[in-house]
Amino acid sequence: MSKETTRFLLGMLLSVGVPLALFLGLKGSPHLDHLVEAPAAHFQVVTVVSLLATGIAAAAGMAGYRLRNIQVTLLSLAFTSLAVIFALHGLATPGFVLPASPVPGIAAQLSLLVASFWLWLSAFPSTHPLVAWLARWQRLLVPTWITLLALLDALLLLNPELAALIPLNISPLKWPAMVVTLVMTILAASHYWRAFRYSRFPLQAAILHSTAWLAVAQVIITTGELWRTSWWTYHFLLLGAVVLMAYGLVRQYRLGSSLATAVQGLFATDPAVRIEAGIGPAVRALVVATERHDPYTAGHSYRVALYALHLGQAMNLPPERLRALAQGAVLHDIGKIRVPESILNKPGKLTLEERAMIEQHPVNGFDMGRVLGFMQDELDVIRSHHEKWDGTGYPDRLAGEQIPFLGRILALADVYDALTSKRSYRQAWSHQEAMGFIAEHAGTHFDPQCVAVWNQVMARQLRIDRYPDWLQEAARTDA
Image 1 (tube, rainbow, N blue to C red):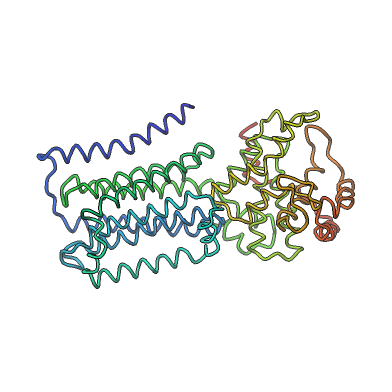
Image 2 (tube, helix red, strand yellow; image 1 turned 120 degrees about the vertical axis):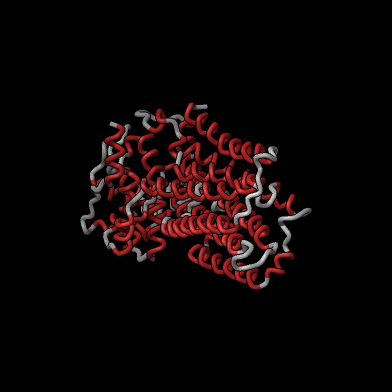
């Protein structure tokens, strides 16, 4: 285990241990655990938590849709739940909107239970049937869920007696509710820990620490005594959790394109600008990591994305599929990270075992992508870009129209750029040689329809020599 990993795990232990020890210390010391009945302060703290969580939810929801990542959208639903239901906890503070009622206690428990559910679901691979079904409605998920939660808040504020139907804050239901919430947060944390060990994304680190605080807050809600000093600590833990998530989002998206670039990409006709606007920080980090691992392919994924996007436009793909094609294209070789560099850059002939490792990279990339929440179209591109029209490709030996259409487009763009680029085992081919190879293998390696349109695209003397600033910066840093 590396020193960095050890330090992070120590930080996680402190995230759980320090607030839990503070709570238990206060609870076990009657002279310190004073009764602090301060409804106004309670209302203010809860309002801040709710507003921050709402902002995080809105930012995550927009980012998830723009980046075509269902995992980010599900995270948005987790913080939406925390925000809107916890707002009910604040609004129901005795003496503000309602007199004393069971609504505040039930809302606090319910907010964590529902938020933990969405957090847990966000840890599922994007190919899971339920997640895949939700992905079909990605654009509507956040506004629909906010509407439903707002209706729930209004219903309980107008009819507080209905809260008695869900007594999650009293025995015996409060104990199973606590267990279920803790199990879901632990399962979510274990997933994000595995993902963090690979990617080291700031957002994943923030999620891990926030999840730890949510778990401790759940313990305090269940075992604390109303208005005691120890009971107040969970409110500040929730505030800390949402502030930390906001910080993680800011750090994560500082790695990505600016807001101006994103807006420019919405209206641009230049494919390069569209790709620049659509590539988020997670995708950029994976592309940089792949190219550092295989320096002979410097710029390859980006050029392939541009070639594929030109071909997709010529084949009249709708905007959503063009976005999926572009993102899948820049990620198509991420599975090579799991292939030793000595094999990737071997100048001589590969052994059968080495060839098998190379041919596993589409599956490796597919597995990585589904864990990170990429959508089905992107996953199809990653997995199928080495399939051949006659069924002799890999990894699934698909043939003809069994091969996903976007994968067929990418296969052609990938081969063209690979042939016209210098590799460790050969010199680059000329444009004419590469075009001759593609024409010769139409109907065997490539979809004949794609080849016909490709010839029309290349007749316009298309040349890709663009190398994005963020890849150039990574190359300068490595030099």
